[in-house]
Length: 153
Ligand SMILES: [Cu+2]
Image (cartoon, rainbow, N blue to C red; front, top):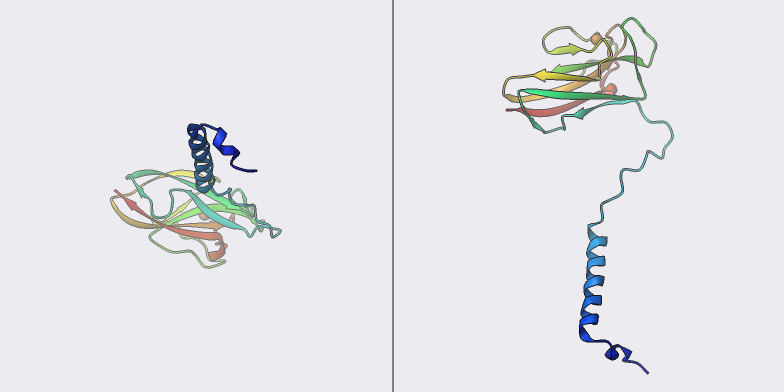
């Protein structure tokens, strides 16, 4: 015997259908799980801009946040391999492994171990390169760099 549904008022059936539809929608729009941690052992050392995002449009004064993974922030003069400090290169490029990062308007050193700063730039398009280098400002090369582009308004 079947058709026991017929004993329910049609409104209940409609409500049930709606519930199922909602569940379906919820399942479809469910956010992807956050990035799983790297499953392959040790993380490759790397640097990255936490802020601004690549391609971002920012004001003439904007905050920059820098991150290093696998290497440590160290004081100037500490030449331990794997330690160093951040640099930002404005409209330049990463510095070859072992070369000293210049000190000029385009190359900003964060020798106090800063991981945050505020930049002030005139309106225009810029590339910003984050470059990690040791306690004597000797670059750790391209692998410890990241370049992003921003538009300053
Ligand atoms: Cu430096």
